[in-house]
Image 1 (tube, rainbow, N blue to C red):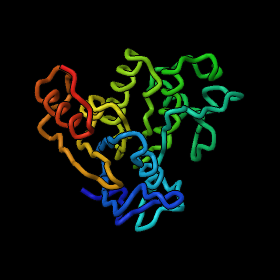
Image 2: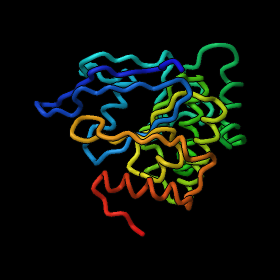
Image 3: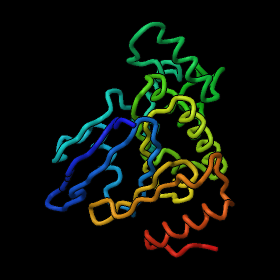
Image 4: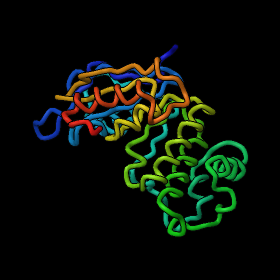
Length: 234
């Protein structure tokens, strides 16, 4: 399977502090990768490198030809309608029609003329996903997009991302603090530690759709939590 994006011997330092050092990473077409790590470990820095948003990264950086990013903050323009937020800057034929179809796909048909302030946090993230996917990216970068959502809304958003990925099949890199979220969604889980990728876990043996109570998933959850220095709960 061909690589959509890659980092070769990638590094990044801020004011003399090394955040990334000698990173080797390849994202295959259609692959879903989750990136775990403690706070401050450099997860978002690595994501920004793949997005082409950080000119200070050293080494070889190859991004997707059409990358899209969804951040923790949906970053919607508050003075624009939901529809305009999704269609803004969209090129090609019938941008409004494509934006409407994208909103319908994330369950927001009928809310096209709403203002961002009229939506819940989960709905605003759905708009951000629609805005990303309407551009048909080959690389989708998700920077903790569910961390501010309540548990029920978060579970619904996770299911939606899984369904959208199955349908569109971009390569995905998900940055998350949530080990269970990584195991539910990804093909491969990476742990970032001491400025490098310290651990890789392939999830080929976990069938989809995945269940939180799957004993195999729970075993992997405990392994990864221990790797992150967190005492697993029973």
